Length: 334
Image 1 (cartoon, helix red, strand yellow):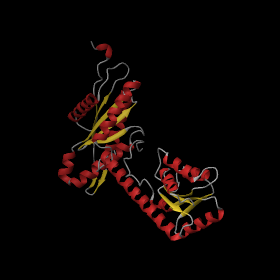
Image 2 (cartoon, helix red, strand yellow):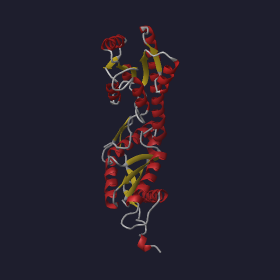
Image 3 (cartoon, helix red, strand yellow):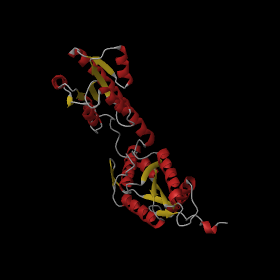
Image 4 (spheres, rainbow, N blue to C red):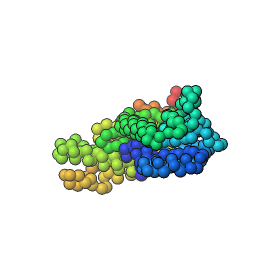
């Protein structure tokens, strides 16, 4: 099962689908002129949402698949184009909407009022159809640039938090999740567990079959771990062949059972690689945070405890789960 909070597993999409850039909302209370505008945009290969007043325009622009460009008449019943502009710019969330305002007003004060309300461009009636098309093209170029910037931002954000090889959370991100879960645990007194997992004899895999096969093994280990946890657990690559699993709200006995299931998911099915089928095993060390009166453990203490349990599991023969001792109870400290 994929983790709810883990885009592990797919790269981000564009903030604005490219196909949606060819859609436009046209709001005009004159039915004849509305049909003319609609026909022009359709001739230019736009998908048109045509409405007759500002209220319908505002409602359409709030939909999840709203057009990214709006051509608004200034003077409309119920809600004019200026008010629609203000509402669009007053939104806290949602993609940017490029607004072209159409009006018979041509005084400098009117132009300033329209742009101050949030319009991106301004066209005075009557206007030439070629000028309208040129201004619409300019607006689309701006929307395309915005979409490219959003894609670049999303990609950078994704790459800053994910491991390039396994697509799991990277070390910084998974430790950040651990610290957040510890804060949540301290408020709610709910149990918290961590698993530190290490691929057994991984150096031998690299030395025998090469690093490309080693990469295949690491990716498959990451995939099996991510699919083997609950939706609200988090899996990250801690470093090298080590993985960290954060398991909130899980009592020690359940944590041990979960770690054993993950260990079996690695050991019981061979890994298919370019060098053939390989048997791979995993050693896991687990540690629990405070629960039922136990004194709290910070992130460093939990990681150290899980790491100690991991190396104990390796010392005992590998392919097993090691359990860190519980922290001393509050009643037992003095």
